[in-house]
Amino acid sequence: MSLILAATKPHARSLPALLIRTLATETAQAGGSDLPPYIPPKPPNTPKQRASLGPQPRQAPSYRSANPRLPPGFGRNQLLPVSNTTRELLESIVAQFNAPIRYAFAYGSGVFEQDGYRTVEAPDGEKPMLDFLFAVTHADHFHSINMNQHPSHYPLSARVLGSDYVQRVQNFGPGVWFNAYAQMNGVTIKYGVTTVDNLCSDLLNWRTLYLAGRMHKPLRIIKDDARVRLTQQVNLTSAVRHALLTLPESFTEAELFERIAAISYTGDPRMVLPAENRAKVQNIVSKQAPQFKELYHRLVVGLPGVHWPSFSSNIQQDVSPHARSAHLRKLPSHLLTGVKGHYTRALDLTEFDDSAAWVRMAGDERLPEVIRQQTVSIVKGPATIQSMKGILSAGLAKSIRYGAAKVSKYWKGTSGSKSS
Image (cartoon, rainbow, N blue to C red; front, side, top):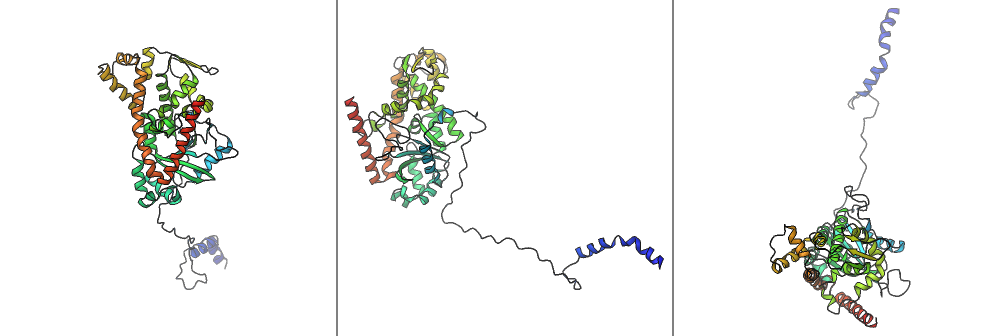
């Protein structure tokens, strides 16, 4: 008996392990087991997403932070402040659009005060129309989603013909589609839609000056984009160079701001016809001088040969042909092509690699007028096309309403200039 116990003792410790292995490897077909067969748990019952007939908006990524490749403070002059009330209103309006927007800003008399106009914060009376511009990646995609969300923003013809038609009309001229007299958050808005590629091209090259010229003046950025911020800084510097080449040795900051603000109106047919306030440039600058100074002061003092103390409103510049040639060579390519074409004929210049040719052009006393004429040739065509496109994008009724408002502003500006 003791031998039997002694023989079984070495296996007594392995008995629990043997039992566990037996239970673990037992199959459901083992008929002698009293354990129920193992039933794997069912996956959670998640309803399948139904296919939608229309395109669904994607969550637009945030572009508020600067691109890591740009210095953190790059372009901070573009971030002009507005009151908290205005900021919240502008951001709430843009946030209501489901279609993805990469870059958005608000501009005009409804955002920044202009002489003779009411801002959106006016306590009583009729509120002004707020102006926005949206830069998107794909215009067709934006209009398809936006037309589904806000059909009343588009005329009947656009709703019938669809987003592809809207995109094709948008591509004419300066490449912008405007929706006017849209009601959002208790205010009336007008917003233009363009692509980021088209916007950056105009900011760099001044192909039409329709977008670049609007962005020469104070605006409130609502959605930021690093690529646009970089090209906008180039655009602002180009506007300074353009103005310096048309100004004398000594001038005031008000003269500089008016010269910059007038670039986009040079050649605009609305300034000839009774369709725009003749005193618009002066109205803008007289009330927005602090914003203009924030926008341009750092850029001006960063250029060689320009002296502008921060405490002074007087500016001096080096007007020698050598100094002016440095500004001339860095004008936007589309404008510079026209200037070079003029002097190729006028001065029989054919080689522009030689610095002597640039100094010769910069020393010509007719240079300011040549620059003005070439600016007119850039602005006139696209501005005319965009005015004609307004009938297609806004519809006949809204176009008549918008035109009547512009004529009213024209007569106000005319009467104001006579009284002064």
